[in-house]
Length: 180
Ligand code: RP5
Image (cartoon, rainbow, N blue to C red; front, top):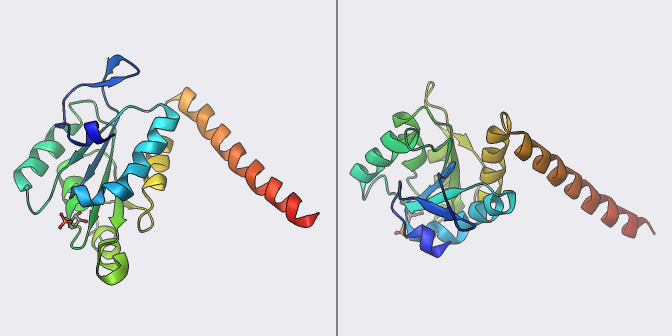
């Protein structure tokens, strides 16, 4: 993951030894977002979905954000997960530059408990949607990305069904123990 975190968007990645085109891009405003955003990578790994990870800052590297967003679809990316904190403009700006679905992850920074990040990401104007998950919930961003990919991917649909069944069994087992 750390190796991929330093990769340049568009660089080919290897998946179990084979070169593949990433289907999901995980981007974040700063490497300080990585402790939160790594959860998206963990979920994508567990579903076998190839992804790329990179740092793209709306404010500090605006040109890089433009080139990332304008090339993403053409490079084969199908869903973008974008995490940012504070004045979190990255997901919205990327959504304005591409027709790919963008899922925003509000990252909690040292001030305002992440409410600033949440509102910056969720309050998009009409016409430019960003699907926003809960503060810090990068795992859900990955699951939502997988659900989007699964619309036309039977393998991923099966894995999602297993995932739902797994959650159900976990809760039912706990309930059974409690009721004993
Ligand atoms: C945002 O500013 C980043 O997404 C990060 O959450 C926040 C703080 O960045 P650093 O100052 O830690 O690099 O752009």
